[in-house]
Image (cartoon, rainbow, N blue to C red; front, side, top):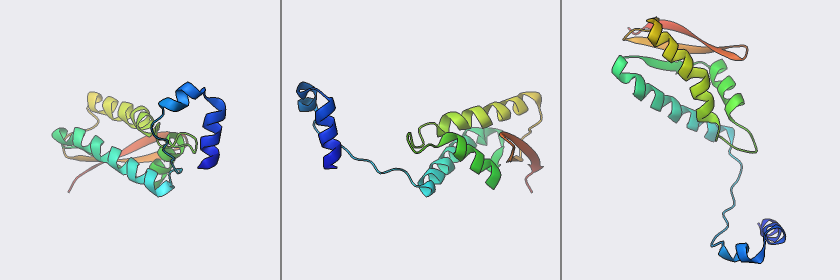
Length: 124
């Protein structure tokens, strides 16, 4: 922590350093934490689709692809929501508009290379 503060003092002008009230040090996210974030984003997506009676599930390959695309050691999980919107949002929206998804269906998403594809199934 002291090295970080010394680096700040070396690179910033004293006037700016004096305006800092607190320096917060963050540890890099662990993969378990990023998986929790992904789970919360998926829960939010399912809440948005609840009025249509549609549920989305990710298999392990889809989860792995989204985590690989949306997480980086440098930026953490900042890009995860954008990746979900790009990879899942467009796919689901197009399927809804085309009538491929109807009420009461569970959408199981799987990775196919660098893309996500879905398999539809009716809920019991």
